[in-house]
Amino acid sequence: MAIKTVLRMGDARLWQRSEPVGRFDTPELHQLLADMRDTMHALNGAGLAAPQIGVGLRVVIFGVQRNERYPDAEGVPDTVLINPLINPLGNSMEEGWEGCLSVPGLRGMVPRHAQIRYQGRDEYGALIDRTVSGFHARVVQHECDHLDGILYPMRIRDFTKFGYNQELFPGREMLDE
Image 1 (cartoon, rainbow, N blue to C red):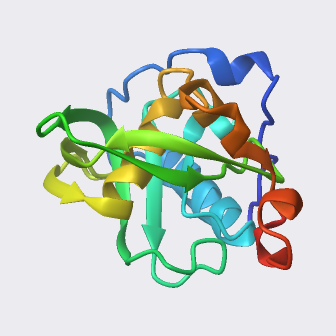
Image 2: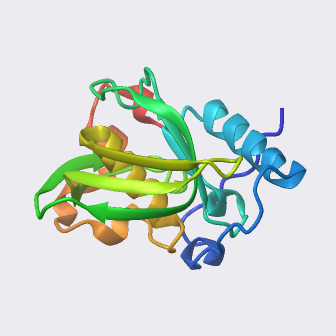
């Protein structure tokens, strides 16, 4: 198992725009994905972007079956998404609580597009094209923001809804990262 250190907010590498992946189904890409999966699962995350472990490539993974950090969230299929494109469908926005492995111990209320279409490639270069809403859409937007050097606190509109988990959600220790 190769659990990598997750960069934390303040590390300059998290602010950089990532580079597209040019070749698929390579040993290096498969190793990166294995490291990302191991790291995400070890930290009980819903997703992880390559820049979070110091790799400046447009690669994200995500998936949620049951996660104590998101007890009310619907399932999201395990997905590898490379060189993603996101298109909002309509103008409807939804606010929801978000956390991040790069911003440990904190949560914030973040507006996101309610419904999106996302496209990209899997690790073998096969096309992914999905239309999603709800928590699935939120996770995709959150992870893809990392590829452009954006962390969720940058999207918060009301900073009275941003703080430490223990203060915002007393008694819900599972939110502590």
